[in-house]
Image (cartoon, rainbow, N blue to C red):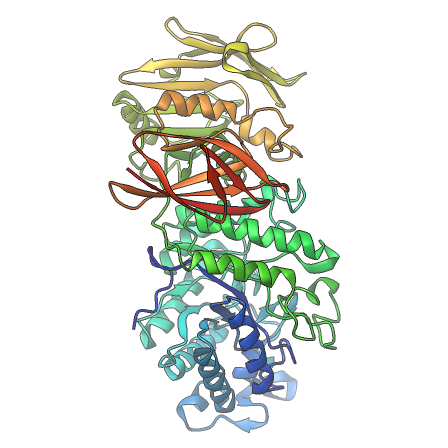
Length: 629
C-alpha cells in the first residue's frame, strides 16, 4: 500500500483539519458516528480528500496520579481503576476510544477521505488537554511524561496501523506549544516520538505538526521527522500583517513559508493548517478568495497539499476554548446547519482542476543565501516576493551549509561583520569565478575579501536619510530606508549601474573570473519587511533590482508576462512538453501579454483564456497553460 501522499508526482491534496460538528474537541467522549458521517459526506462531496484528525490525549490516555499523605506518589490508575493487565492497560489507553477511532477511520475510508493523525494532542486552539497525572509537569522534557507518551504512541499506532484510510502519523497538534524547551530538547522529544512510531509502523511518513518556528528549529526537525509543515496564519506570522489578507504579500505567505521550511529542513513540507479566522478577522468573500489564491500558489510551488482550519463552525458549544475565544467559533468550511461556506465551494473548484492536472516540480532559477545576524525568515520571504515579481523562482540555503550548484546566487540585506564563514564565502567565490552571478544587497556590511565585489568602502555612519538608487537607462528610481549610510566608490573596471543622491555608486557590477558580482548599497529586502503596500501595482518597482540581476545571470524563462501581479511557475514535463501555472494575485480580472520563446506553443489553457498571445485570468485564481515544441 502506497501511503505517501507527499511524494513528487502525486495529486496536490485539498483538505481540512477535523473536529466533529456535534461536539468539537469533545467528539470522542460525546461519540456520535451519525454526525461524523454527515460531516464526511459533505466534505467529500465538496472536494476534500485529506483530514487531519486528533485523538485527544486525556480521552485516549486517561491517566491519573494517586498519592498518599503529603502528596507522596503511590501509583497511576485510569481514573479510579487500576491499570488493566492488558496491552492497552499497560499503556493506560482506553480500548473504548480505540474502537471509536477504528470506526472513525472506516467511515473515512467509506468516503474516500485520507487521515493524517495527530497523536499527542495536548494543545488545541488555545487550551491545554492533558491527562491529570501530568498537570504542572513539562510535557516535552519530563522523563516520566515522555515514558507514558511513548507507551501511548506505540499502543495507538500498533492498534490502528492496519486502517487503510490513515496515510501519515503526526507528532501531535503544535507540540512545541506543550512546554518550554530548547531546540535540542525539542529535537530529543521529536526523535523519541518518531522512533516510537517507527517501531510499530515503518510504512507511513511521520509529520512534525509544529507551529511556526525558527530556522534552527526547522533544520533540527528535518533530522527527526519525514515531513515538515507550516501553519501560515498571517495574523501570527512576522511580516505578514503589514498588508491586508487579500494582498500580494499574503497571497504568497503559505507558499513562501512552506518552501522556506522545506529548504531549511531538507525535507518535504506542506501547508498543514491555513485559515482566515472567520468574521472576527475577515469577511466570507475575502476568506474564500484568500483560500483560492493561497491554494493556487501552494500548488504552483510544489507544496504537496493544503489543509484548511477547520471543518465545522462551533458556535453552539459551551466548553473552552470556544467559550473563551470568539475567533475559534466560526472557522469552519461548514456552518452549524451543515451548509457549505463559499470557501468550501472554492476548494472544490480548485480540487477539480488540481486533481486532473498533476504537475512535476517547478523550475528553480536562483539560490538565496541567508546570512548571519539577519532575520532569516523575513529575508527569505521578501526575496521570494521580489523574485516572483521579477519573473523567476528561488530556493534558500543557510550560509553555513554546503552551497548547491547554481548559476545565480543572492545574498540579501547582509548585515554587520559576520556575514558568512570565510570558508563558505571562498567556496562561493569559486562558483562565481567559474561563471555564476552573485547579487549582494547590503545593510551596513561588506564582504571579506572585498575586492571581488568591485567596491571600496570609504566609511559608514548613522544615516540621516534613505538611500536612493537612480538610473533612467535601467528604469531605476528607488528610495530605500536604511539605518546606516555606507559611503562607497567603485574600483577600476567596475560598471556603475546606478547612483545615489550624491552621485556616488549605488548599484555596481564587477567581473570576477567568468562570473560577476552585483552590489546594491541599500538593504532592499529588510527595508520591505514593514513597508505596507510594497508589492502593490502602485508601489515603486523594487523588483527591478532582481530583474536586472536575473538578466545579467542569464536566467531564461520560456514564458514571460508584462503584469507583475500575475506570477508564473514553469513545470518541465519532458524535452518537448511543459506546463506553466499563472496566478493572478490581484483583486480584479487581469489580462497580460505573454512572450513565449520559440519554438514553444500553447496547446491548451485551463481556467483562463488564452488568445492572440494574451492571457486573461479571473481575480485571485490561477490558470494552467500546456506548451509543446
